[in-house]
Amino acid sequence: MRPPHSLWWSTLKGPVTPRASLDTHLDVDVAIVGGGFTGLWTARELMRRDPSLRVVVLEQSVCGYGASGRNGGWASALYPLSDHAIISRHGHEAFVHLRRQLQNSVRALGDAIASDDIDADFVHGGTMTFARSEVQSRRLRHYVRDAHELGYSASDLAWLNADEAAERGRVTESYGATFSPHCARIHPARLVRGLAEVNERLGVAIFEDSKVTRIVGSRPGSDAEVVTAEGSVHARFVVRATEGFTPTLPRQRRIVAPLFSLMIATEPQSRDFWGEAGFSQYETFADDRHLIIYGQRTSDDRIAFGGRGAPYHFGSTVEPRFDENPKVFALLEATLRELFPHLEGDVSHCWGGPLAMARDQSPSVVVDYDSGLASAGGYTGDGVVMSYVAANALADLLAAPDVATEFTTLPFVQHQSKRWAMEPLRWLGINVGLELANWADRVEQRRGRESAAERWLNRLVD
Image (tube, rainbow, N blue to C red; front, side):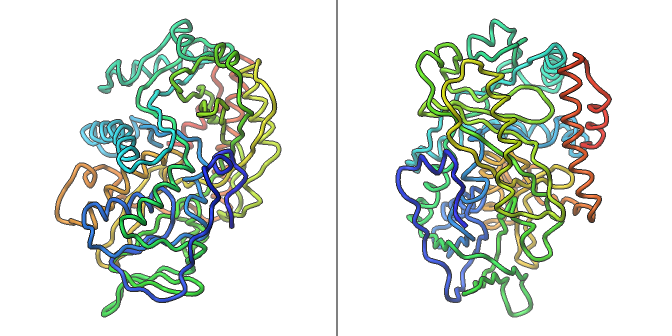
């Protein structure tokens, strides 16, 4: 498998040549399955804590093939669960700790990229969520007031009226926008490829074109094991960092649901276009519709724009043919041209792929010291910063299991989500949720009011 024809892969600074595959048996300290952000950050952090460790990374294709190399390029403090859901499950103190850690980690991620000398187009410009109807305006203003009551400061999250929002960025029919500084724009493929090179310099062995067929926990007298078609690895710990591809592993089909998120990119836009549109600080942007959209201004002045809407496929099936959906690509282009009617030129790239959502929408970092099996993931599309945070938690848990740190005390650490329901309930529930989001957006657009679909969607999500 090779990366899709995405903007990110087509603008790498050199060709991607696969590293050698695993064709022998190895004995190591830590084996990591998955060469994306989670796996590579974990390897980096382990080596930073103990350079003597023997660490290997096994990747089924090339590092960054999955969501890490094709996402929207938002390095944000976003979290899949709402603030109130976090508080309800874990308490207010845990909520404050989590939010502060995520916010701080946006800048820490940028510092790590800079210290490793990775050219990933990191620009810490913040993020805007536009209100493009009175309904969205009411909802976003309520969200800001509620956030301030929970302890956010005005510098963490602010409501900008239409004129104030236009000073940063302009889209059609803007009633205003929220602004948060806790987001940066990145070039994800350059970051993940750069991380792989950093790990090799640190002494990590990376094997590509090495699809793992089996992961086995430790037994008396034998460490945990990873098996590929041509080789195997015994390790004190095996870390599964496979995110949206987790259901392709044996007995892992119900761990997460693979949801497909698709993207398009435009041709480079002119100075006149950006003079009209703004986004001079490279703020990422979205609006408050229920069916998520997300965009960024790239370093070469394109717009990279994505969104949900592709269906969940029965049985948590993940296949390359699902990475393309002409109907969704057309809807994304229509939405982008609605936001920016003066958009110039054509769409130059279309691509997509799976991300991972846990049944309770909570990410997780889990280490089982008895079996030697560990895992991290379930980011539901918020994985650029979350993977960095999760990797630090994993590294702390593996390197010093008896020491509590700012990462190991986060509420999603050692959290085990329930498995998804059996089919066809899983297929029905997820796709009904997608249709409810579509329905709610249509009602708001046509009738200017919230719909019953939104209430049902909230109940389903909760």
